[in-house]
Image 1 (spheres, rainbow, N blue to C red):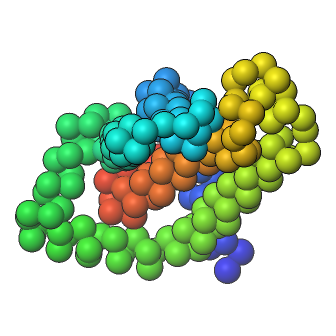
Image 2: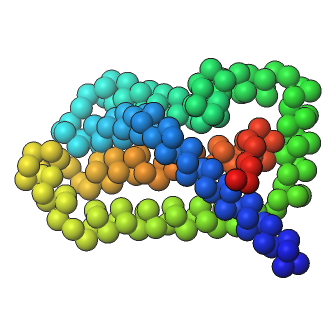
Length: 194
């Protein structure tokens, strides 16, 4: 039992380390797409002032487009085209979909402890990020400072800044973690001990 728990912990460490290093290796692309989504959301929430409803719709397309590109980038392991092909094959190739399901079920049975530990680790980090963001937004004078400097519209609430920060932190972290977890469970992400 102790040996199995140690193996699960080891596999969890490897997966979390792989997720972290993937994020570091591809930081510029991840943060670039996250910044586009964050800035779009900031503008939508009247961070710079009122906007036209058509602008709001166009910004929503840009925000969601940036997120879809980020998902495809991660799904393709830093190759958007490969990410598109993976989705295409999953949706159109019954044999590949069946193979995916079989491997997925096998990996869930084999690595269920590692999955639970990974989800706990992910949840702790996500909670800490959200907590830090809340402290920055609600326990500091950041919002007043941004309004005084003209960076945030004086009539705006804290939401444009809150969601801008979340778009740069928690949202891409969640997309990277969940997508890599899915790839790992589907047998498309090989994690080797070094």
